[in-house]
Image (cartoon, rainbow, N blue to C red; front, side):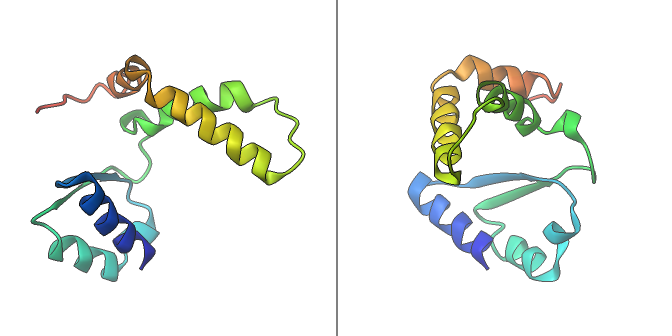
Length: 112
């Protein structure tokens, strides 16, 4: 599957273990994925969120940051939208305080 390949490539590129925070959507619970997660337990840690828990998902904080700047974009084509989203995500990536704010908004405790 594509997800498995993407996770393996990410592990190689990052050079270390991966933590995957995942909601419990049905597609995320199929037997082949469960088997992959179990087989990859030495480098992959999977945290399953409740079925719908936007308050626990830090990504929910990033989405409005992206939408705020591109919400009124009158794009000529899909490529223009894609470039605008990538540009905004890259800007957010270099502003750690924004990401920290999204994580803090979950009220989860980060040990590390």
